[in-house]
Length: 299
Image (cartoon, rainbow, N blue to C red):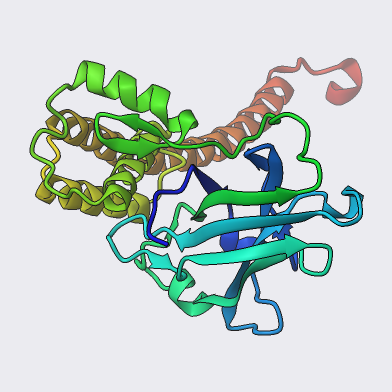
């Protein structure tokens, strides 16, 4: 125990709070020729107060009789805003036909995951990490490694990121090379959490003023202040956030003005309509007064 694992996988569960499924599965990933997956119970498995989480042999029902796999693993729920990750104790188990998955039925309290500002849910996403090493395999290994959206993290300037994040972070460092020069934390999970928060903040800034609420902008300013306090140099982002906030204010002011103008226009249309009716009535009267008398009228 205590040695490095030979595989580290991050599972991002989106919209965790609104999931209705009793049990959900990650995509398959391959370690030493063996397919695995993670399974989770968002509302608990026989313990409805806790998240249930397991490491499982993928497609175990189709494996030849007598298969066994010995693996060492560690399951972690990432706190994306602090170092307060939750890890189960490192375990070492045999996976076989009788027991194809191992983990914890009471992995972590759900109320702590859903708690406001807990750091476990950012933009509705819960991140789970499994570190695994296959020690022994009895029976044939699975075929080749398959493509999966669950991938190992990539190091970008000291930040462990998902491949989908790496491109944007690399571009950001190209344009703002000093962005993290004063960033102090060394904990990998904490660094990753801050960078994920920064990417979410940039995503918010890129939204249209109509999509952003005042609460969104308040949270964005608070997040920016937190990241600046941690040592990030974000003058360029602060300027953009100010512009977005100003555009939001201008948009709301313009909408109020537009509503007032439309109301005045409607009132004017009604007055014009009433005036047109009076004009037509007056025209009819004038026309009648100008009509010449007939012989019958005189006689």
